[in-house]
Length: 143
Ligand code: RB5
Image (tube, rainbow, N blue to C red):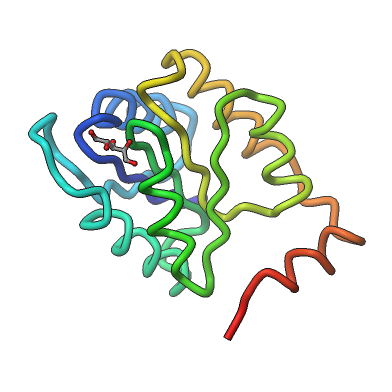
């Protein structure tokens, strides 16, 4: 599985560690930046990741910023993206099971790295439940 990943400066350290960790687990990781802890604008990396998910160039995406909100807001402007913010494993599970999030967003300044690992693992291991949740996600897009 090919996973795109991006962060701003606040999520940079966790992004780098997750790339190493996920690569070791056998995932093909595509890094959309940023490449340092120098202050930058999350949207500059969130849009390229979103386009790659929408085009099918990567199967799923992971995005990190300080609170997760800037990334989630930017990503969710894309019609083909359901970006879900998760800050613990239970929400990491539900954001796939109920919302079928194709991009997982995490608040790097408010969770430990171990928690970020756990959230990613849970999200990847969980299947979308479909049924009533399929109907609900179909009602998300607007004109
Ligand atoms: C950066 O200071 C911070 O604003 C950013 O990481 C994020 O939390 C924005 O939503």
